[in-house]
Amino acid sequence: MGLPYRLVVRPAMRFIDSERAHGLSVRALSTFVENRGAQKLVSSIYRTPSLPITVFGRLFRHPLGLAAGFDKSAKALGAWPALGFSWLEYGGVTRFPQEGNPKPRMFRSDTDSALINRMGFNNPGAQSIRETLTARRTAGRWPHTPVAANIGRSKTVDNARAPADYAETFNLLYDHADIFVLNVSSPNTPGLRELQEDSHIRDVVRACTAIRERRSGLKPILLKFSPDLEPDVLLSCAGAALSAGIDGFVATNTTIGRPPPSNTRSRRILAEQGGLSGRPLHSKSIEMIGELYDAVGDKVPIVGCGGIESGETAWNAITNGASLLQLYSAMVFQGPSVVGRATRGIKKRLAADGFTDLQEAVGYSRT
Image 1 (cartoon, helix red, strand yellow):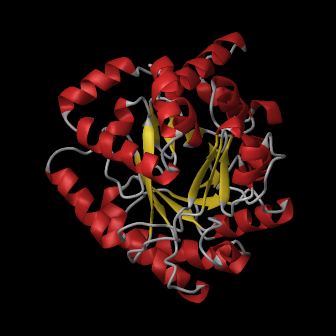
Image 2 (cartoon, one colour):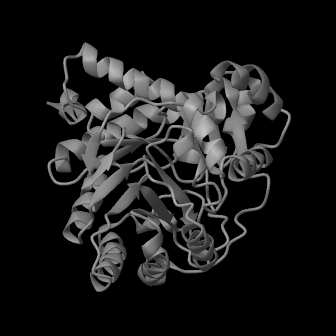
């Protein structure tokens, strides 16, 4: 199925605005792949091998999941396991509905295999998404894989009130996710990245852990970092988060950095404001995964996100310290067959390097 995507779907998408193409894709998945017959058919096409690993006390069939941003409003949750993902993350979700930034706000650089977006947490708000997810559960259409929710700060809320804003969204979605990711690092909400400071981090994490204690739950809470942080700031924030009860980290969010342009069109796209994801982000992501693993890898798991597009890039993230992985941009440039290719690539490397268990490989290159 990878060949038809590259020869037919992807060339056709070049003539459509990036955000519209994305919306069409999610809409198609949410209608076609939501019935059980279609899910079985799609699952038979996009099979992925079993590479079990236990993280956050949960068993994952393999480490590769869908990153936040693809299914912002949680409309297509049933489609992602059928496409081979072992887990998924919806959102970002904010407490209040947001239209996001003015359009156009999503751009593709095909020659760089990079996306740039300045979406601005566009979503219908936590209450609306909760109603959507409640209806899904009631209808018996909840995925049989771990589900994560990505939570962002509302644009109308300043950083002084951010802890309460995150906590309210966390509380509203508490019954509708297995894992929660606190997004304090998107470059597309003014002032959001300023939360990546020790006291802010502690306040946001504590506000959410207080809700968790009140709900008598054990659901993991993760913190998602910017790849543009200096190492000393990163490790200081990580320490503050750990002291407040964080359960893991996601490395990384999108970057405001840019690679050298590969041609004239690339130069024009890369000049757009917003966060960059895809292939050029991989080296930054690996560097941050390694820094976090060296400092706190014996305390909490790390989710590797950024430029995961093959077995080799996935293996790179795992051996530098990532227990779980996520991809987004590779779905745009390669189609859903990338999930199977990447997981099969991991399995081949496990065998070739003499590992009997995936957990053995986590952080191996750091030792």
